[in-house]
Image (cartoon, rainbow, N blue to C red; front, top):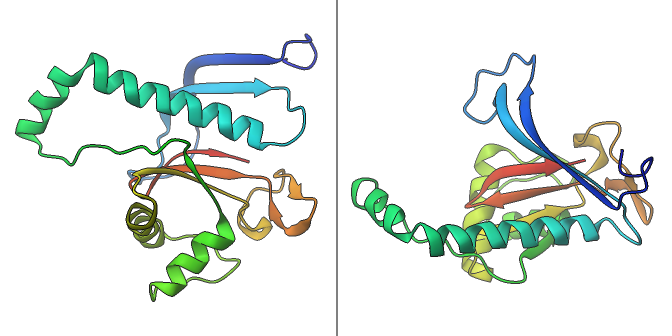
Length: 174
């Protein structure tokens, strides 16, 4: 719609129902989704930067507007304060794999990250960059959907991304 109607950006918030047989806590079959279409002028990092700015705004507003509620929750369910570095850390998949290998975690260069690897990488990113929130981009083509755009400089990788909070994927883009 964005391109056909000559809009630079179109956002839609609405219900999403998936017909997946995924009985895990990581795959929701019904949720409220935020979909975005956006004209990309030069590079898909424009999308990543816009999303990063949106998340930073949300995190700041939660802290400013709902600090009382967060403290009430914290008393019953203790948690460490959330840290989000600005600008948001943007890391290529290759660099994430290097960090994991350096820490002694088995990870193939072109293999998808397991849940354990994602959690470990979240801890490593926190240690190195001092942030709970980061984006990983440039996933291997072998582990992404067929419609993911290949990286024009290295077709073994894609122009795809995931955003992570404390080592858990919260959103994905192919």
